[in-house]
Structures are given as C-alpha cells and as structure tokens.
Amino acid sequence: MEHLKGADQELELDSKSKAIIEALQQDGRRSYAEIGREVGLSEAAVRQRAAKLIVAGVMQIVAVTSPMQLGFKRQAMIGVRVHGDITETAEALSKLPQVDYTVVTAGTYDILIEVVCADDDELLKTLQQLRAFESIQSTETMMYLKLWDQKYNWGTR
Image (cartoon, rainbow, N blue to C red; front, side, top):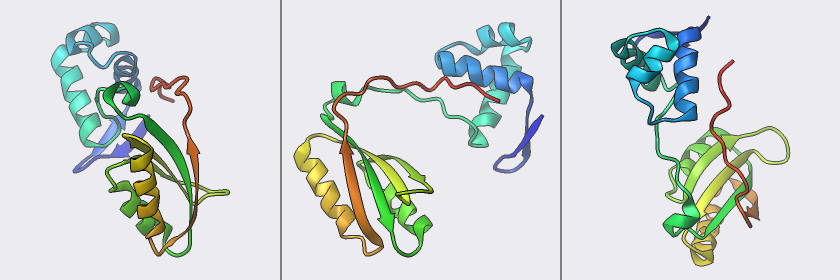
C-alpha cells in the first residue's frame, strides 16, 4: 500500500482506491454506484474515496477537449533553457494563460511547456513573452502538425 500526504491527512492508496482511479480514467462520467459495484464498495464509500483523492492531488476529474475543435488552431511544445532558478521560472511560465502543461526536466531542456494558441499570431506573442523573461536563456518551439493520439488511462501501479 502506498501512503500519500493529502492536504490535512495522510491518504492510503490501496487496491480499491487504485481501482476507482482506473475506472474513472476509462470513463470519468461513470457513476459512483456503478464503480462501487465493480470494486466492492458502496456508492458513498466510492464518493468519499474519490473526494479524498481529489483533495490530496492524486487525481482530477475534468473534461478533456480537442483544442482544434474549440478554435485553438496552434499547439506547440516549447523546450526552455534557463539560467538561474528553474523552479521560479517554471512557476512563472505555468501562470501564462496559453500554457497548459509545465514540466521540469533533465537533459537538453530545463523546462518543457505545452502551449495552446488561437493562431500563429498568438503563438508569436507567447514566444515574445517567453523571451522577455530574464531567466530564459533560449527556447525551441516544436509546433504540432497533427495530434495523433492523446490518452489519460495509464492506470496505477
């Protein structure tokens, strides 16, 4: 069993909690009653565990959208090289409205960010914003030509 520290308490991630997570990864609209029958818990118990998992930051239940179909015609992954404090820069980048994904990495880039923009003009403005950061040494933009596949159902371990 894994222990995860929640907002105010320690959260135990047992096989039933993992099964709840996996069920919601497959279909986030499934009812707690249905999941409860599958994992051997009551609807109330599933609801309570799900709430604890959300508060602890273990999972989110969100609608995953297709940016292209919502009018965002340009997506890109941007590799960022930083001099100075990487975590401060990552925190600042994650607050930009175009940035939907921020990760600190080891290797060629210090930070990777994914941006979702309405068009090339917005992407250009975003790149200009990045270059205005004193801590950013350089960037490399990899524009998405086609989003082939996107999955969020990797399960638990």
